[in-house]
Amino acid sequence: MCVSPDKVLFSGEVNQVDVPGSEGDFGVLAAHTKVVMKLRPGILVVHSERGALRIVVDGGFAEVGPSRLSVFADLAVPVNEFDVADLAGVIKDTEENVADEKDARSATRSPTSSID
Image (cartoon, rainbow, N blue to C red; front, side, top):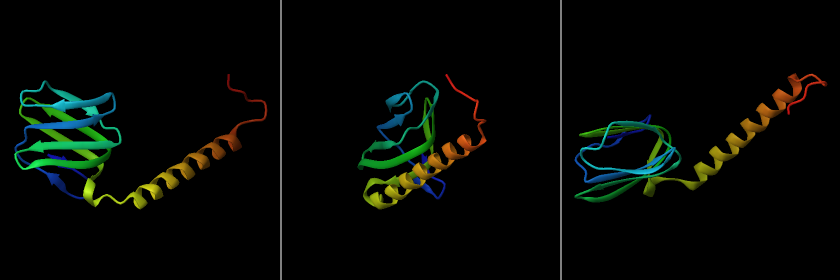
């Protein structure tokens, strides 16, 4: 099952799922050992009898068990519905938030403070 905050994107029988994990990509087959992994931004690929479904994911985690994989993603959009312009906006907002945070930290630091 692949879930975004808005909806369930896929639920059903599969042959394999390739997951972009924070420690590296990993493939999940039946009888996989239990693991919980943080997701990194990337493409999750669901291989089933109907073909391959490619989903853009960002944030969240995957929970694997011997007979089930659950993916709970902050962002999950089928590749063919993904809007690159939306991604550019998210990147710009993130960069602005980082800059604002750095400015706020600089303003609260005393002039004699130093970080080695």
